[in-house]
Image (tube, rainbow, N blue to C red; front, side, top):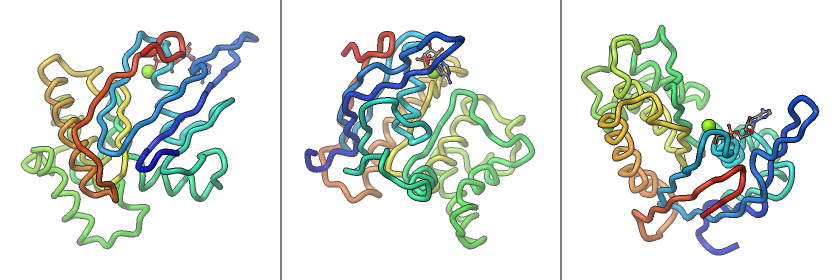
Length: 221
Ligand code: ADP
Ligand code: MG
């Protein structure tokens, strides 16, 4: 393990059986990601991007190979430790925003903090802080249906960030947005690579970015 690596994925595969046939959704993928890096996954539909993100987010386990996060093999962690990582270490952002429709923007951010036992006053303060960070404080009391797609995704990003995760894992975060709004969301996420790094215990060069290409479950570049 090299010092400072956030992720080391070693020969990870994920095999699903579908109607009697095996699908190698992720096929022997190895990669390293350092703290502060901004990594994009590119590949056609079905190439294994979502499956790989789920392995990185400890939402699923590899069938073979290993995923190390901060030096710990995720396969060796107990359920409690995995739950703790999912709650605090990883912030998830999805294509369809996944906001709760009956809650306002600020309440949608607060729900991420609810399981952490944060006092009520701090809940509100931190959630407003994050909404300001993503440029949405004025929309705090709006319901998701009163927000544009780009605004909803920014609320979702604020919700992901409010727990001060060490990683943001975003699956097609611009998939439901027009090109301009999507590119604003990518700029926001790219800028956050620094913000997240600031809160972590890492002292690495910031702003590094690279592209990983996936083809049929394997890493093409
Ligand atoms: P992408 O996100 O790049 O579109 P996915 O990771 O969603 O790709 O899927 C990769 C392959 O794995 C696809 O062939 C998909 O049908 C298959 N797959 C994904 N999840 C499952 C599952 N839970 N059960 C069976 N097959 C799956
Ligand atoms: Mg996908």
